[in-house]
Length: 286
Image (cartoon, rainbow, N blue to C red; front, side, top):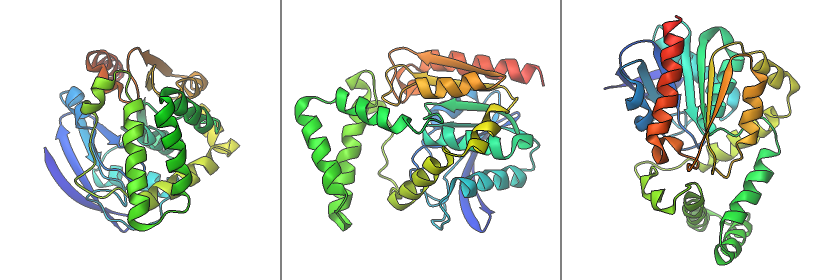
């Protein structure tokens, strides 16, 4: 593994490179979090040179705006050029899957293939469904506490806001897994601050993009191999990314039973077989 700091669009981005072969970039979720995708990288670094990185404003990368989907996609294109690559493969988890998809739609000539893990899809209704599923998965006491925290968050500030957000994140973690015992498998985010400002701005921009018919048309026109993977028990409904996969000419969709938002951690053997099978097929065809 080799860490590199690369300046892209005036922003210093932390990257980590491992493996050999064609380039695959992995985009972490959040937004506002930082890289946690080593478990996926080690599954395929004998097939690919895997690039992991912290998005602008996250972790070890500079914290400067703009925090927009377009800016984050442009950062990815800047990284591709900095690594001297032709078309590369883009992948991501959660928000990172959506970013990889937005990048492919903006830079189709630069994208060889797409790996979309636990993304939210392109229907603005995803969030309402997700919110309903979260409440359904909480017991009565936690449901009341959750709703109270969300109400208080609207007017909180400073340390009070941070405490509320931390408690909400802890509750979300418990429903992000199919098996409660698997909570301990999930990544923690204690090494660097979480950028809540970037989170709010990016998510607002993403919701605006979802209402752009041109963007949805560009996604449907992506004629590249695409792998969509989703945990069946993820509160972010698999129906929405499944529709995106169905709209793309070369996409395949895999639902993994007994897995929530992190299928590569809860069912690593199933996830590995799906991912390596996909990569082996597309790399064989050149």
